[in-house]
Amino acid sequence: MIKFPKPDVSQFLKTFAIGDFAVNRDESQLVFSTNLSGQYNIWAMNFPSTFPVQMTFNNQSCQGLLYDKQGRFIISGFDTDGDENTQFYALPLEGGTLKQLVNNEKVRNFFPALSKDGEKLYYSSGKGNPSYLNVYSLDLESGEEEKVSEGKEAMTFLYCFSPDESSQMYYKMYANTYSLMFVRKGGEDIYITPETDEHHTVSDALFVTEDLVYLLTNYDEDFTYLASFDLKAKQFTKIKAMDKESFAMLKYDKKNHQLFLSSEKGVEDYLYKFDLSKNEMVRMQSPCSIIEKMIIADSGNLYLLGRSAIKPHNIYKFSEDKWESLTQYSVPGVADEDLVAPEVVTYTSFDGLEIESLFFKAKQENDNGEIIFWPHGGPQAAERKFFRASFQFLLNHGYSIFAPNFRGSTGYGHKFTKMVEGDWGYGPRLDNVAALDWLIEQGYTEKGNILLMGGSYGGYMALLLHGRHADYFKAVVDIFGPSDLFTFIESVPEDWKPIMDLWVGNPEKDKEKLIEFSPITYLDGMTKPMLVIQGANDPRVVKEESDQIVKALKEKGRVVEYMLLEDEGHGFSKKENEIAVYQKILSFLNEYTSNKVNV
Image 1 (cartoon, rainbow, N blue to C red):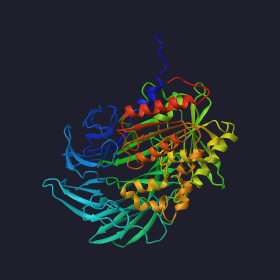
Image 2 (image 1 turned 180 degrees about the vertical axis):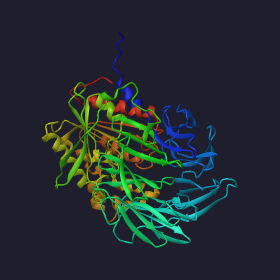
Image 3 (image 1 turned 90 degrees about the horizontal axis):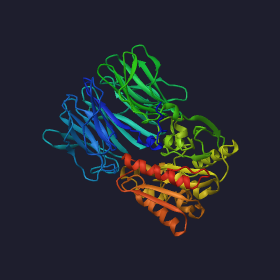
Image 4 (image 1 turned 60 degrees about the vertical axis):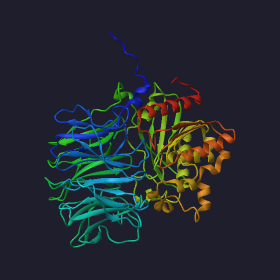
């Protein structure tokens, strides 16, 4: 009998992902953005075959993917090596050469939308209005472009059209926790939630008829619910709410006159179907724990992109009351039983607040007794039951991972999410310290023996915890984390700047607080070995944020390693880079563990 060697642990990092997808009108073709070749490109499945065919070869991440409703071409957006300056292109249905349609150099463009006849491309752009954005219409035949709408007071995006395209819905974002939608109808702007000074969100909305809109909002509530708005009567109606659960996505099945909704409840998502004729809500079985995109075809078929804790991104189709997995992504050469699903645990923070967390425990045969403490990014996001190749890679090497959803996280209500606003470095920090104490009290680790790692806001929190609570840790990894809140506020994209006063703080009015919350204030406390990872093209947390902390620590003679990726932004779009980063992280962690494992 042939005996095969144990899978090489690098296989965990060779797992592929899906960034976006679209389905054409007659469901004969599905296109999706994936790194199947090692770098992101658009691939297609020409049904009934599900064999993937490569459509583009530009090796860039896709932002925005849609079909011409007449079935003649595809629209896609691409940036350059993670710089997030997305430009829009047309692509033939059979793939091949891209035709550039929008080329606004060094400008951020968002949310492409096509008219029903496919003759006009609409998009939101920082061109001429980098803070609040304008909406432009491009005639695809003549190439003539006109400004349709000018953003004021807040970032403003074109969201969708009414069925006959006589009205348009716009999304106005004042902050992550304060976003409104309005319909421009007959020259009038009609907001679809009642007027109030209380911050609330409208997270999704759609037209069912010219005068009837369905929406998801937390107006006057803590959790997001389903509501409707009658544009003729100017009437808002609350329809359906779930207990401690927020609806997140909304799609309309015109054929069967029903809505499909996804919801967030803590660390996982749920799927629902709402019959508009019967006014009945039914929970559906979902093929995954986290739902990232849904599309309803004219036939009523539901297409869904999602992932689970031990299952990577896949695209699923729901038809005739059953699910079919159209893609078959998994960890190559690794069985499901060799992967680790998290335990959901709760602990009490310093002020009595209950914090839900995910605890990934390395399997006994691999366990090296080490714990990585992982504060998530965002900060208005959450660690959820979704697949992370990096987690499974480290777990297979014996490292357990603890990931708390500290105050400011999503999935626990509007009030909980707002708790981080203007308080980046106090409440969330102490929530993380309480988690560290809980791990010690429960006997999982000892003080001074914990490994600390985080990315983005999690990188910021790793730096801050290191500077203020170094006695808990023995080594620290910062992945593109802000190091100085003053320089961070100054360097974020222009369309982020209007929300910074509420989100982080004002450099003049909140000067003392921002000094207190900035990791660079605590250089003297950063005594443990550190690894810093940074993308050179990152527009959110710019390269200088990492440069300055590395320089300052080296001047103090501290042990700090710096890995700069010249062709990445705020993340890893190239598989080769992702593998190199986590191999480096593993090597670094192994340096400071008692049970070293060879890379």
